[in-house]
Image (cartoon, rainbow, N blue to C red; front, side, top):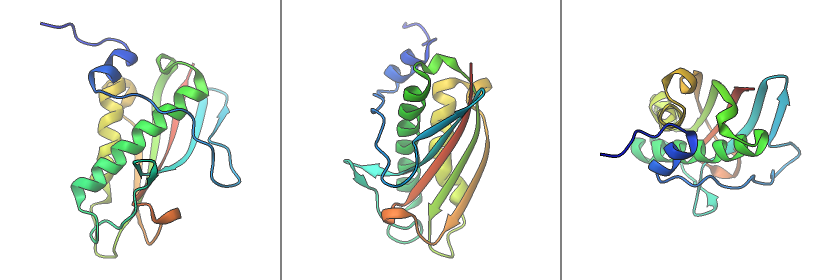
Length: 157
């Protein structure tokens, strides 16, 4: 029987996750801003095979695929957070996640799409640190036609 992973690095390894390097912004903004003990991470769009994960929920993309896209964004957000603070063990709390879901007007399950991100954050950090406040919105379009965009706020030491 293997030991339960206790560090963030061990949890990521157990989940088969390798964090990406810090991405270069595609417009006039910075990837993150630290103010005191808070790190504000700019919105990350869903990417698949290095390209925008394009489509609309309730149209060309089904709920399960949207949830996978949100999970992929969570991995990218963690890569940015690690670049911002150097070590994910310094995270004291995931404070807030805001999700924009590119969806047709009749799609009403943006919250379930966003679970792909939220569930991974809890898997990586545990309930006490990873559980967070959250908003999930349906929008008519996201830059580059991406299906989901998510931003994050974390408290760090």
